[in-house]
Image (tube, rainbow, N blue to C red):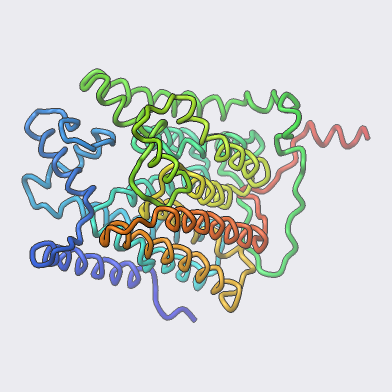
Length: 436
């Protein structure tokens, strides 16, 4: 028996976020340590510049699409908390999308509510939005893209995917798995794709290996790469991406291109962060890194991404989750806001996990949180006490990478593979089987 419904859950979550925003205003005024994220101040300053007809890139360290500054222009005319309310509303929208996605796959009501609660009441989630970080908007669009694909709306998904990659570059990693699930047998004109529904005791549907790209023979399925759905998706998403990018390049020139896009591809940050690369960057930051040196750190990321895509692409929500965890763990720069990227996807895979909270699930939480707290301890000694603890901090980064890897492996081991779409056998494969 479900003790709380979705409406009550969203209402309580909304009240919690409003209270935190109000409290944040008080803390900013009365305490030395501010509640508001420093990035929110950057966003607000850029929005103020745009409202006065200037370039948002006149604000140093603003390295986002001008669209974000445009969305926050009401900060200057209505109230400075407008952006926080917008980001928190996006938080709630993610929760609603999670519920809708799981409902389409016939997940029981009680599991849907629990999964939504995992997102809405995650401390990382409600603090990120209420402190003024824009990641909830990105999460909401990711959810909407998955929902559009599940409803068979390829053009709609393509439009928002192109928009999303312009707005925040990291979702480019989802391009290949999306293309791999755009199979003609799933997306037929005038009908919605047949979704693989949730089950509790039924055995898993067997997976046809021919539906995957063979890692050692990329030409084997070359014809399947040139289907109508994939071409449409590529053309529309590419057009949308280049439209927004071209428009803002026309308005703001190379400054926009360098700050909003190219910077994130070659970014090196000498300040301490969770990444295992930070200490090397810190030691050599006075010397100019070549483009090759900046890009070479992508190799471990790309290798892991390719492996995960080849094995899990058909189980699209799980593939997105595993990709994002791995992408963040191996990234050149890691901050706490990046964790939201995979936290929004976690509720989509929970109904298919056989992991029990006691004890295995609890141990995963303890290991991940423990590694993070251990890192934060050394970060505090460096940042606030001025102690020379760079080596212990770097070791803590290595342990945090190990913790992320261990937890991801555990989640993979306890996941019941379930393709997003039912694997409908095409006529050509049926004929081939008959001949055999």
